Amino acid sequence: MTEHLLKILIVGDGNVGKSSFVHRYVSGQFNKTYKMTVGVDFSVKLLHWSDKEKVRLQLWDIAGQERFISMTRIYYKGALGCVVMFDVTSSSSFSSCRHWKQDLDNKAMLPNGDSIPCILVANKCDLAHRAVSADTIDKFSKAHGFITWMETSVKDNKNPLDILKVRNVSDPPT
Ligand code: GDP
Image (cartoon, rainbow, N blue to C red; front, side, top):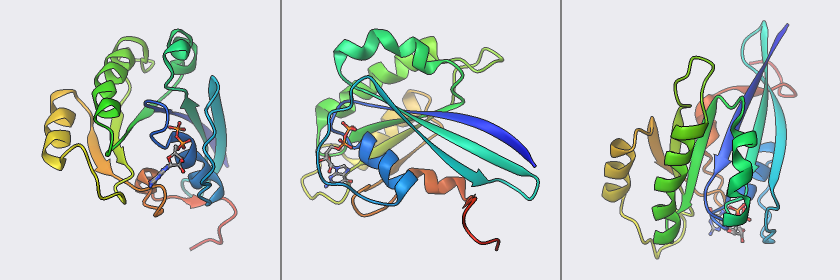
């Protein structure tokens, strides 16, 4: 069995749902208590990729607070993909995605020198008072080179990494 390491970054402003997302994905729970991320959290999930390959998925949750931004170059190192997350009810968290994407394009490189693929994720779509329309997100995503974008609700368990369509190592074989 071959094991691959896949480091994925989760970036975005504070309070958009990054920690909840990682926690939900790794443990299957939604925790309502707000906890400010200090520096970086990183969680691991082991996945079946195929009969012969396992993936050790490392999710790096980078704090969105300004004071941590100078640390991010170290955290970007070795990442193969990124989720840029905002809160669909917060236009300022949406505006910040432009800066996050620029920062990633400048600092987060694949071994071949290309910038890493990024997915734009609009979280909290369960809330009625949205501040950013789907049309605006779509135009922004295309203009700034995201590979795709999607709406999610970590609260309602609509999870962006479900697109990976892989089984947990602990799941029974299908
Ligand atoms: P982070 O600072 O980006 O890591 O954000 P957190 O994961 O700490 O979440 C901030 C707050 O938003 C918490 O109170 C979460 O319970 C809440 N939250 C996260 N995801 C959702 C969601 O999809 N819908 C709603 N309504 N609240 C959410």
